[in-house]
Length: 416
Image 1 (tube, helix red, strand yellow):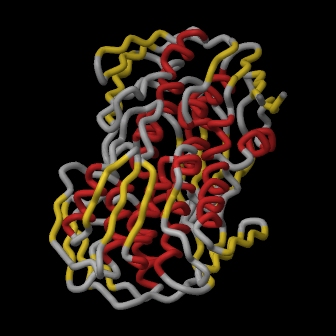
Image 2: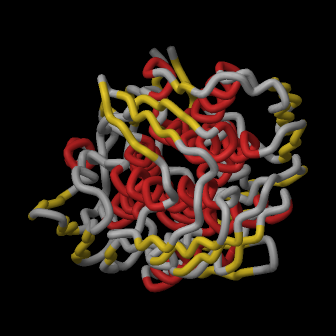
């Protein structure tokens, strides 16, 4: 199993190009199921989760062709309507096949995705939304079976904000008969990106990016050509890496509007940041200042940046309080940071971080995708050598991370 070896202490310098967003690409690729024909997507990142998605689509009868960052999906041969456990268990986002299959074929059978290292993340709101649109839902032997004639428009309020739930119900609603109103909808850029692609396919959606999305159902959609938006979490990770190493980095081909909350916290911590139309330049201070953080749904501080920010606060002057309000069990990385010398105390959903003078390299274990990135940042600033085990998590969400950091001057390499 691969590991990542890092010798810390080098300030990052240079420029880095941001890849397409994993969290935007996954629902957009699944949305191809809503139309018959060939759709083409550009700037699709090479990631384990993308490979899992394409494998699942092939199982359903979709023709898949990949040429670098471009993916072509031919759904004219869509024939299966079941997403089996062996595929769904690899990636929770596989549940996003439910809405498109139900809307286009009138039926779907999808394995329950189960829990994960950062919390249960149930799909109950996905199912309630489908039922509101007229679907009959049955749960048996670990599978969700949904059936309907043509779905009917409805008003539905999510009990809590859910990104994948909003995306799943939205994809089902575009082919429903009549108007649907989705309230307390997620406002993340990935939801907006999906809605924009659906509208280009012939859907009639307005309000994406707000808490209320209105959908006028249409009889059918057509294939599309689209480009995936930049990955805001990768952008935030490189911003944090430059800041914590005292480096000077230009981040290119990104969307600064999507990382406003991260930029604000880094500025408060002492980083100098200049924002362009598609670029962000960051200059890290000799030593960061402690800043409090509370994760929130977009446009608040993203939960997917909490672990990386904790690595920064571990070596900042003062005491910071980091509150995690989105997912339970998302402080698993704390024990590994503590192995590197961090001073962190957890109480419920809050971590109190007392900045230390320096971290020291150690063998550590990654528990999930963002925890992996956290340990990489810690390794970049730590004394001596850090060896990170179970880095397959990184391959789920970061494209060529070691190569990008190496190009910025980091001593980082993958070892077997």
